[in-house]
Image 1 (cartoon, rainbow, N blue to C red):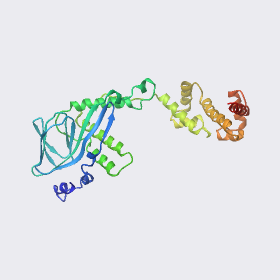
Image 2 (cartoon, one colour):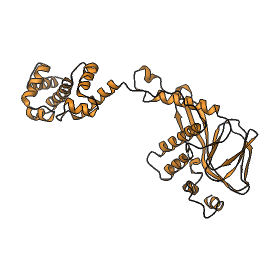
Image 3 (tube, rainbow, N blue to C red):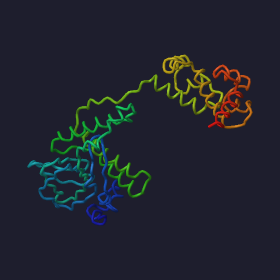
Image 4 (cartoon, rainbow, N blue to C red):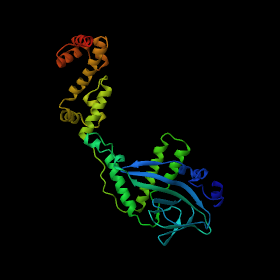
Amino acid sequence: MNMVSDSLYSAGAKPFYYEPMLENPMALDRLDIRFRWGRYGIRVLHCHFRSFPPGFSVDYHHHSEYELHYIPRGKGKVILEGQAFSLQEGMLYVTGPGVTHYQEADAFEAMDELCLHVDIVPLEPEYQADEGAKQDGHAEWGQSTEIAEAEAFVEELAALQAVPAMDVQDAMECFLTAYLAWRDSRLGQFEIIKQSILQILLRTIAAYSTSKPNLDLPSRDMKSYRYQLAVHFIQDNYRRPITLESVSERVKISPRQLQRIFKEQAGTTFSEHLERVRLIHVSDELRQSDRKLEHIAESNGFASSNYLHYVFKKTYGMTPMQFRTRARLKAETK
């Protein structure tokens, strides 16, 4: 294919962006690419590069799926539902289910085409997004937003007019991204190909659309978010001499704001939460090791064994050594 394609253009032409695909233009067609997007299944039937010699034509035909055509080089024409349109480099057109079309390269100049032929089908309920996660209070991880975006895309795709447009969003560049992921056997190549397919679809819609879909991205509860950031940082660094000021700097708010967030979210002060985390780890060490109290205090962020002794007795109503003795007696009687 590459020898044929190269012969269609003059030797002095500028480097062709999609040159790598000429080595194996039908490579992606051999892959069984299918994935879920929201409540739809996306199955790729064709994803390839093709060259039409001068004057070559593809007779009238239609598909029951969507076929997206892009012209990376050359010129020609397409007839969509009886209406003829000129094609040139940088253009695209979409043929939806049942749209009859005819393609033809210019009589004196070859025309290249990148083609994405996809089947988009609603999934059966058992394969759709798990609503149980919502009922159980589990995080959706962007699932509801993906569902909404997929629905909006399918609506816009079904409403597209059968007319060519300019590829103003560079959708066709994603063909090369997918091809190189396959050719180079990159880690995550399926995910790269999948995202390339989605980008082709979304950028194609954007080339036609003049309006913006009314989709609101999920927003954070910033107080809860900052509280969780602080809690995670404390859990990871409780052995170090961390302070309210150092943690507030990490979460990009003032110490006073962070103190207020701990009161609202946990009902404790920052210092109380920090001591609680450290004491939990101290308790585990007392149960599981014979280390001296001064070593345990030092490795868990306490300034001294005397201060640890004071805080531990105040919290648990017994000294650290009494706690160790009781814990071991309890373990022996089991």
